[in-house]
Image 1 (cartoon, helix red, strand yellow):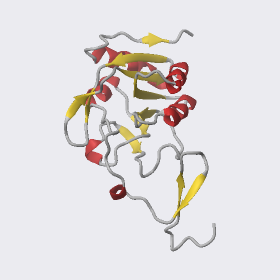
Image 2 (cartoon, helix red, strand yellow):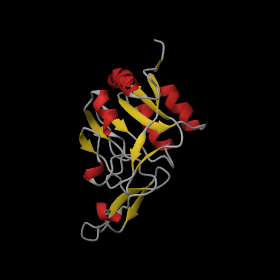
Image 3 (cartoon, rainbow, N blue to C red):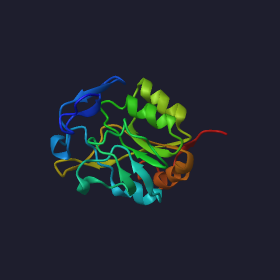
Image 4 (tube, rainbow, N blue to C red):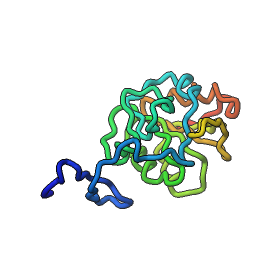
Length: 184
């Protein structure tokens, strides 16, 4: 790659799949919380009964991380460009979830939380999911408020995460235990 300017040249992923050379490192202080940050409430994880190997879309600030995981990939680490291992939790940015959904669909084990939507990525999510439920979720926000998302959320599971959908659905006041299982 040539001179790395004293270790300050990094590799970033752009909108496409090609890598882009950057002239600086990105740190947590360089990335702001945005209106696209919807922090998952603890009751979902408590009722799931799962500890994840990875949260692939974790908030930068540790105080907003509610997912019990061995490893957290924040926007600094760029969860789309890192390998995913084991049981994953994914609550991606809702403004552009397509690439996240494709990545989750290709991974064998995990839970994904996304808003219901009429889109191509929703079709891909449903095709990959082995079990789903609809939830009403009040999220934490960067400014400390707790607020509901304007549409129902879908919790989708694959592999080892499948039984968790039933547990979370049973704990949700909206779904009342209703979940959908892909026939074998």
